[in-house]
Length: 282
Image (cartoon, rainbow, N blue to C red):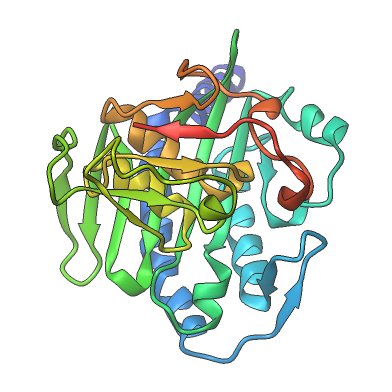
């Protein structure tokens, strides 16, 4: 009898650990709870330092990342994490992480410069990828915009948003077509490397500094496209959101759709020293 009860208990635990719908719900519940703590820190003072790649990091980045890791490690035991603390890892260390079945890619504050300067355009990004034969595929994601009163997330194969103040949930639809009012979201470094050709599109270029916002907003139709070259944790929260809405990431070099991802698809080390191919959402 004891063996039967133990088997049932272990089966239920295994089912809960690997049921993506339950994981998605738990991610959203925790981010809704965390939003108050993030806003408390946003309104406070910040201890700011520079990382090895010369980007900014605050004490809030570190503390919030620890909270996220502790929460999601309990949610999905034996999963692995990529985040700010991995910024100095070697390519071999990254590849070792991608040998595992589940990989969390989290950015506690994207964009730190906006956050530290009182600009509300920053986000908490949480993405979960699962290993498949061809690489890792995004299976869950959420992007919290605490100062903008919104969270965008995946649930049951669809994408939704919630207004934090009202807790009103809205199912998100397929993006709109391009019009004279359309925008294209670009990274801060875009204009340093490329010329934007206004003859190719009527869309107006916009820069907000928040990489995951570029992808999430493109996915839900607030922009018709974006281009990025970044660390995985900078935008992983938007990958599954976009996938659920039929918005694809494509390689800039040949336009090929990216359904699966591996360590070689993202910047490793110092972005300022990288000149490999960019990824485009459209």
